[in-house]
Image 1 (spheres, rainbow, N blue to C red):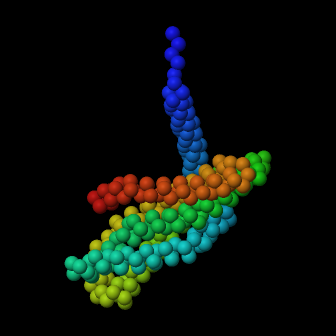
Image 2 (cartoon, helix red, strand yellow; image 1 turned 135 degrees about the vertical axis):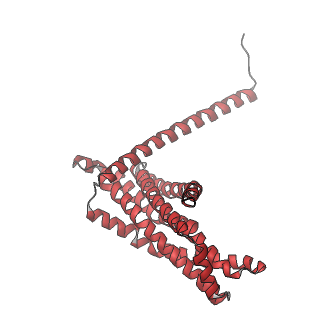
Image 3 (tube, helix red, strand yellow; image 1 turned 60 degrees about the vertical axis):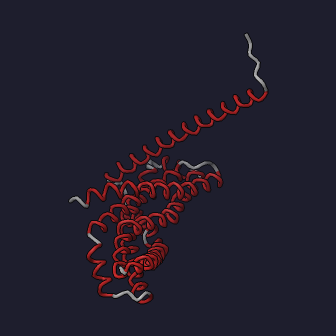
Amino acid sequence: MCIKLSPTAQGNVTFHGLMNLSAHKWLTEWLRGLGRFTLLAAEAFRSLFAFKVTWRDLLYQMYFIGVKSQSVVLITGAFTGMVLAAQTYFQFHKVKMDTATLAVVGVSMCSELGPVLTGLMVAGRVGAAIAAEIGTMKVTEQIDALRTLATHPVDYLVVPRLLASHIVMPILTVEAIALGIGAGYVVGVQLLGIDPAYSWYNMLRYTATEDLVMGLIKAFIYGGIVAIIGCYKGMNCGEGAEGVGHATTEAVVYSSITILVTNFFLTLTLGKILHTL
C-alpha cells in the first residue's frame, strides 16, 4: 500500500531530514576538532615537561607576549580600577561606608577582574597574532618544510609560546592589579574625598593573600588557554587568506569564551580550597 504525502508534508519531511543531517555533521566536526585539540595539548605539555625549547625562542616569545602587551593591560587595569572605585563609592556612600570602597577594589582586582581582563586583552592581541602567524606558515607550507628538516612543529612553534604565556601572564596580572588598585585609590581620595588612612587600612585588612594567590593561579591557567587555542587554530586553519582570517577570529572568540567559562569553575574551586586552608 502506497501512502502519498501532500506537498506540505513532503516539505516538512525534507526540512527535518536536512536539520538532522546538519546537526549530525556539526556534532561530528566538533568531536573531531575536540580530539585534535586534545592530542595537540597532550603533545605540547609532554614536550613542555621535557623542556624541548631553545632559550632564544622562549625569550623572544616572552618579549612578544609580555612586554608588547603591557600597554593595553596597564591601561585596562588602571581604568577598570578607577571605574570600579567610582561605582562602589556611589553605592557605599548611601549607607555611609565610603572607606570600604578601596577594599572592594582590592578584592575584585586581585581575584577576578585583574586576571580575567588581562586574559581577555592578551587573547585579543596575542591569540590573534599566534593564530595568524602559524596559520600563514601552514598555508605557505612552512610547517611541512619543518617536518622535512626533522624539526617537530609542536616543539618549535607551540612549546615556546605556551611556556612564555604561562610565565608572563601572572606578571602582567600583578601589574594590572597594582595599577588598578593605585588608580582606584587616587580616584577615591583625590576626586571623591574618601579618607586616605581608613581607606588604605580597610583595603589591607579585607584583601587577603588568598585573593592574590587565586588571581595568579587563574592567570597561569589563562596563559595556557590563550596560547594553546591560538596554536591549534593556526595549525588547523583552512586554505588561503580566508582560512587564516577565520582561524584568527575563532582563536580570539574561543579563547575569550573559554576564559570566561573557566573563570566560573575556578572561582568556585579555588575559593573553597584556598579559604579552607
